[in-house]
Image 1 (cartoon, helix red, strand yellow):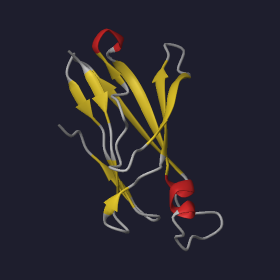
Image 2 (cartoon, rainbow, N blue to C red; image 1 turned 180 degrees about the horizontal axis):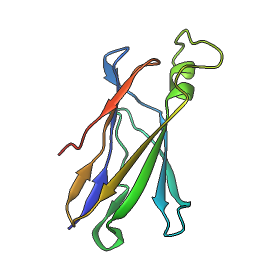
Image 3 (cartoon, rainbow, N blue to C red; image 1 turned 135 degrees about the vertical axis):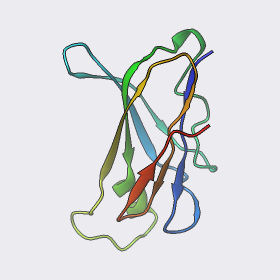
Image 4 (tube, rainbow, N blue to C red; image 1 turned 90 degrees about the vertical axis):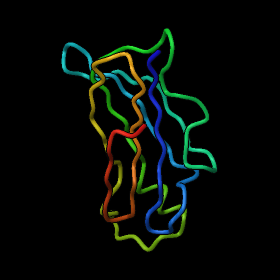
Length: 117
């Protein structure tokens, strides 16, 4: 069965990004986005449960919006005003009933992602 998971690593401090807000959105046929939920990462930088799984899993186009600026501001990082990175959107597609893992590795100045396992 398909499922969608994520986690966030704070590469500035070399640890999981605990307490980061992540929004989950689904693309509509009209080109707009439907908000599917908001979660906060746990002490391990992960969500407590998959964002989608089982019967709720659907293929399609999605977006995760990681609130990087707020996370680093709360962590006491020296940020410019406005912060260089605020909300990092990751747009991705899921075309098969499989496990999709979309992690974010980030600092206040950079980020990367990949399809994990």
